[in-house]
Every structure is written in structure tokens, then in C-alpha cells.
Length: 272
Length: 272
Image (cartoon, rainbow over all chains, first blue to last red; front, side, top):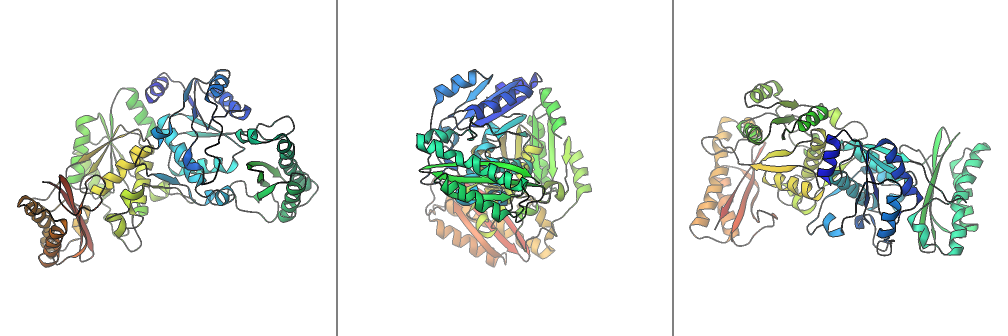
């Protein structure tokens, strides 16, 4: 991989990297397309990273669909696919981890302790294994993108981060590899997340500035219309992820909620 | 720095990196010379890294001798010197750290909590800031070399580590920037460290295999002949740094001891 990419760089080609866990959907493919627009070589990695799953999470049942992934990637111009085995990435004696500090502690970090440590570590390893000029991540994992941005800046990683828009199903549900866990009934109720984000935006547009008030209305919708168990409805500063009490300028609204055994996340930024 | 090194690499030059905290002595210069033997470009970094000093350690009084360092480096063929300001390396909001696990916990790690976290972090940053093919570290900081080796392997850092021999004063004292803290009397007594390592080697050569017995004899020499306060006399596996009970094959003997306010370290590997 390194020799191939070094030769490409020698030829003046820009290299794009799209790290994924496979089970690719249109959201992932939009990242590959974004890479194709500014890079001459696009590398896609497929690795279900065990260190970012907590005990009892869905590592074992996470969908592995390599053949379908490769077929999908060949249709959107990926040049190289790197799909290592777990033992290549974490050989016996493996011990090193990257911690990015406070940005990883709240929200997802609170409900998934150790998750972002695993994410930062695998992403840094992939940056080293497939040295690229640009790395493409989806905005659906908003906090993850900030964690990676923090790591790149702090550790002086020579790569430029691109955060790409959320891709949604026609009814508004954010694309996710985990959507395939949903039963037909859960799939219908999952829409309450997107509706919740729209409720927040509409309340803000109508003049509501109290973050707790908005969060409570969203949470109510998730539980009543969606029948969900809610991990959080965050109204937070989009840069620091600190909770806000009152809406001013840009505010991130982020949701994590459970439909049965499936945990979904989504977010939107609203401006007042 | 990156553009310069990218251009050099484009020209097929091998790049060597020698990370230092300045206050250069013949040990450092031997690293630059080793780099010069296998690389066409040698980068020396000079940065007294605050994150590897604990509270109450000697960060503030650590010798800063930039002009003398530059003069010394020009004599041994260094091509580029990178001496950043602290605020460039750790700007406000800095939060990311690398932890390399068990290899960093014992010995130095026990007496200097957080030390190797700071070391691993700054070294990784320097690897990113001055991308090189080879990195040169001295064997005097034996555990540090293992920490960096672990980090490079675990995080797939695209660099090859070279660990170079300890350079000693004519009487045997290992070269160290901290030797300049020593009073004339302390300098004389400091030799007990080297003598202690030789005592260990001679005991092993004479057939002693009991590690505790050897450690006790060394410790006694440090306290009586050296008047030192001893942090540890380690007899350990040279790969894992786990303590050994009985000498077999190669054993690392490592010492950390205080002369007044100056803490010195040294080590040797003995084979039976």
C-alpha cells in the first residue's frame, strides 16, 4: 500500500482516503465520490475495528458484506481497497492507544466509554498504513469527526480532513450500516429521529431559545412517536460540544436513541 | 520542513531524524553521525518537551544551550535543525496523548508517572512534523527506546528505529545533559553508577544467577560508594522489561539514582 501510494505521490497525484467499517451504503459512497473529485487516487479501507466497540455492543453481529462492498466501490471509482484482518491490525502484544481528551468525553463518549479512543487509534493507524493527502469522513458521526480533527491538529498528522454531508433515505432517515438491523416496524419508527431534529429546527425558527425546552420536546417525540429509549438529545456548541443553555449563533442538535437492540445517531446544526 | 523533506525524498534521498532536548553532548552527536552514515539528509530537533516532565521535576532548569548546540551540530553534518517554541507544539486547547501500555509502566514509568506518555506523544508529533525514514535514539534511555519501538510498531508509523550505543566519559560515566548539574563532588561520586553496572556484570561472570542478590550488591555500592538515593536497580528482560528472578540469556541491568537534586540513569545488558 505504502509503495503504491508513494509512487502515485511521486507522480504528483493527490491521494484520498475513506476509512470505513464496510457494510457500505450511499453515505459511504458519497465519501468516495467526494474523494474522486479532488484526488487522483482513492483508497477505501474496510475494517470492523474491535477497539471501538464496548463490551456488549454489536461488534460480533456488525454486518460484514465484503463482496457487496467491493462491487459497490467499483461503481464509484475507488482505486484501492484495504481490508486487513484483525490480527494484522492488532497483533499479540498490541498496547498503544490515542486519547484526544475532553472532546471525546461527552455524549457518545459518555454512553460508549472507550469508543473514541478506539476510533482515534484505528484512524491514526490507517493514516500511517495508507498515507493520503485528504481523509473523508461523514458528518453523521459528528463527534467522531471532531475527535479526528482534534487528533490531526494535536498530533500534526500530515493530512487534510474533509467532513461530508449526511446522506439520507428519501423519508429523511440518515443512512447507517445499522439501519439493516431494523425490523419493518422499527424502520417506520426510526423516522422519529429525523422528525425530532426537524422539530428542534422549527422551534428555533419560531423563536424558542431555551435549549432544555427544545431538548424536552425532541425527547418526547422520540419516546412517544418513536417508542425509543433515548441516550441523549444534545444541544451543544458545534466546535466544543459543550452543552448550551440558550441558542445563539450555531447550535448542534445531536440524538442517540435505541430502537430495540439497535442504536441510531443523527444530528443537524441550526442557526438562529 | 515537510516541503523540504518531501523534495529530498522525491530526489531519492534517505532522511534521518534525531530528536533531542538540546544541551547536546557527544552522545547526541554520535546519533547525528550514525544518521549521516545511512541518510543523505539529517534533521535534528531540539525541544525541551514539557509534557514529559512531572510536577517538581527539572523542566524549568533543564539546560537550554541553543547556540552551542547549533555550533556542535554544524560540526557533525546535521542538515536541518528544528527548534520550535513550546506554544507551536502545544497550542491552547491541546489535548491528545499517546499511551503505549505496559512497557511504559515499570521502572522509569513508576518513578516518573506520565513521563512516557509525554515522550511517546512528542516523538509521534516530531515524526509527523519531520517525516523521516530513520529515527535515531540513544540506548542510555533504554526504556524510552522500547516505548518508541512499541509505538512505531503498534501505530504503524512509517519509520525505522535505530538504537545507538551509550557514549561514556573516559571514566565510564554515561553522557547526559543532566551531568552538568553535578558539583565536582557529585561528579566523582556519580561514577558509582557505572561501577555498579560493572559489579553486576562481574557477579554474573563469576556465576551468580540470583537477580535479587546482584541488585542488592549494586544498590549497596550506589548508596555507600556513591552516597546516592536509589530509585531502582532493575534486572529485567531486555524485551519486556519484566523483572527476572534468575539470570538466563540476556538480562538488562538498569539503574536510576539521585545525586542531590540530580537524577541519573544508566544501563547495560549482560549475557550469561
